[in-house]
Amino acid sequence: MGRAEVSGEDNLLKLVEADGPDDSDYRLQEQVGFILRKAHQRHVSIFAARIADLTPPQFAALAKLRDVGETSQNQLGALIAMDAATVKGVIDRLKARGLVELSRHEVDKRRLLVNLTAEGRDAVERLIPLAREITQETLAPLSAKEIATFMKLLAKLA
Amino acid sequence: MGRAEVSGEDNLLKLVEADGPDDSDYRLQEQVGFILRKAHQRHVSIFAARIADLTPPQFAALAKLRDVGETSQNQLGALIAMDAATVKGVIDRLKARGLVELSRHEVDKRRLLVNLTAEGRDAVERLIPLAREITQETLAPLSAKEIATFMKLLAKLA
DNA sequence: TTGATATCATTTGCATACGAATGAGTTTAC
DNA sequence: GTAAACTCATTCGTATGCAAATGATATCAA
Image (cartoon, rainbow over the protein chains, first blue to last red):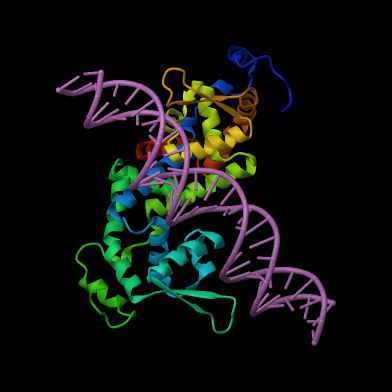
């Protein structure tokens, strides 16, 4: 864009010029964001290995609906940290599989109410033990004490 | 699927029947996977606020290329934890913006070599200080000591 | 009451993310 | 030396994830 530099091989210079932290010290592998992304990937992979026919967001929707009962689509999204566009896709797919059913709110005709079907409720109940195992396996590299510490700190970041 | 239950209001029963951990105790909000996903979302959001014209994966690719120099596309993917299909899309977009350039490996004609352009190198150098700030802001809810602990544990999970 | 504002949902467009299938090229085994 | 096995990359299909624009309905204020 701006300044046309000499070439691409002037790395040594920078070791001298720097006053703040040195640019050549930036290690991607050590940045929270990068490791967070990898940890999340690992979890999703563990999830898929144990629950093949449902994704984590889909399961989250079902589990939340089990907790709170009938809710509007947007409200559900807020509860499981999904924006309106994302939650729509998730609910569409759950509906296509007969795990949730939709209806219009009687009074406020904007709202789309979501609820578990009998089959959906059955599925969550059946999957919760597996979900517990997924949590355990994800945390398996840590000791019990480390898990407590980690969860406390992770919660602060989320 | 199986047992046709009475209705949806027999929650109290389950508190009695359970022998293992109770199903009604499953709290989505407390599962690693769910919080990990939220923490990751928060980081991406912080990233976007500071570096609007590049995504975290795109930046990761550039930062890694700066470290290791010319590499094959798949090799780069391995270094930044992306499968072949994903890395292709990322590199395509970086190429379209003139930040990386591609060439064929002379000997092994399967390999697609990726390298930073001068503009690409310039961009990474310029963005690294911002990336440092992103890391800091992401970790801001934690004290220095907590950060050290958290990073150690997170690394074990990833 | 009506006009401005806000909320709920949908749609579009773009960017990861990954499994699975495929094709091209390379290496291994025999 | 050739067939089998492997590797690199591409493509396709599906599923998040989010910004922005839009439409429909509700609410608020004048």
